Image 1 (cartoon, rainbow, N blue to C red):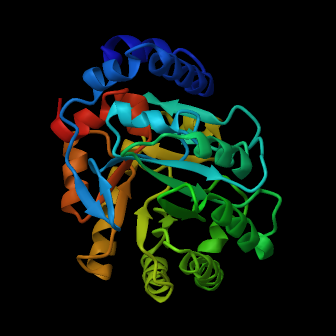
Image 2: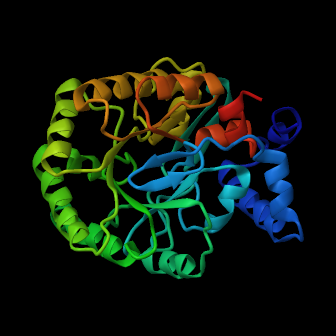
Image 3: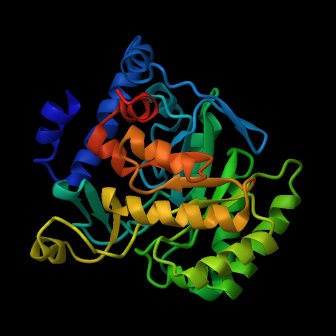
Length: 340
């Protein structure tokens, strides 16, 4: 019903407006007497496929990618839609409004989205307040951390440390985001030297905790082979716990949407089905380079059960969805796990 009735109606409305409307609708559903149970009945049947990773128990390998619930507005309730884990953020030390609107675009012909949101979020202190009150049950919660737009790259480490220190008591794992294309200069932090410094600094903070958190890095799909090899070296040198492959792409190759329409949308990261093949390639390369035991989270172009199985077969331990949720609806986890 979602794809043939609800989605066509929603796609007549501005994407960012729909995003906020969807949160309001979900909050209303979960607040109803019996609403959470109804959601589990409708959307989360047959979604149990438990696995262990980093000493954590995931009820299934499907997670909600960062960027969807940046501020944890309904963080604890994603489990009622079947998700095994949720990644909040990207969160920055100070609140920021992000880039000017309009900044979110659909490409239905490609089952894709272009966004240039620009780390819009309420800031780390607001997220901490939500997490303090959160009853997450069995849901695994991660935090994706970044820097404020006006923080120079030379001081970026300080922003990541602030977010890490404030969130460490409340989340199960961390993701370092240096790969978004929507914050000017951010991707230069993926270069070997600044990235090694950043990750070593965070690892020092992490290892000082009574119980260190799994620390992951999210990378861009646009890295060439030499850059991927550098990432592998950095990961090993800094003793990272995992990688997330991949963030959105700046490429516009092979799209069905007319070129003029795409150009009118402007800059931003492309996500969804067009990212499938490249994400699969990166997954296979990283698995071969890092060996069979290093944890890798696959994200990018996972729209169907076949996509999910292919990514797992390529070596992913866990999967995340973002655009798949937009195009497949609230039953996306069940569809990915069962094909129906």
